[in-house]
Image (tube, rainbow, N blue to C red; front, side, top):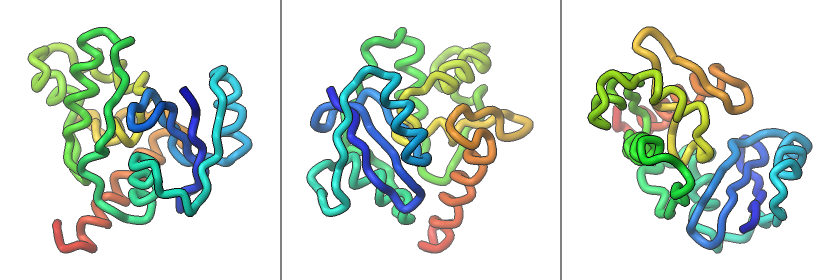
Length: 173
C-alpha cells in the first residue's frame, strides 16, 4: 500500500491505497506538512505527475478542486478495521449529496441510533477519508461543528461555500 501524492488546484493532497481501494486521504496542505505527515505513517509515497490520469480517485480529487461536482468517487473504501457503527456512519455520510449537509443528529437517526449524535461526531473526528467520506457536510444543529483537517472549522466552512457556489454556477441551486 502506498501514499499517492499529487498536486491539486488548492495544494498538495494524498490518498493511501492500491488501485481503486482507498484507506486514507489527506486534503490539500503545503508539501512540507504533507511530507511530515506521510513520513509519520510508515508507508512509502509515490509522486503522481500532473499528466498522469491513470488513477480515477486522484482525477476526481483534482476535479473537485477545479469546481467539478463529484457525486460518486468510484472507489472501494477499506473500512474493515473500523467497528461496525463507524463503518455504517462513514457509509451514510458518503451518500450526502454535494453541496448539502446533515446534522450529527440526522446522521445518527439515519443510522438507526437516534441518541448517538455525539458518537457520530467522534466518528467524523477520526474519519481517515476526508472529501471521499465528506465529513465536512456533517454539521451541528447550532453551527458548523468541528473539523480536524488543516485549517479547522474555517476549512469546513470554505468547502461548503465552495460546493454551493459551484452548484449555483451550474444552475443547480
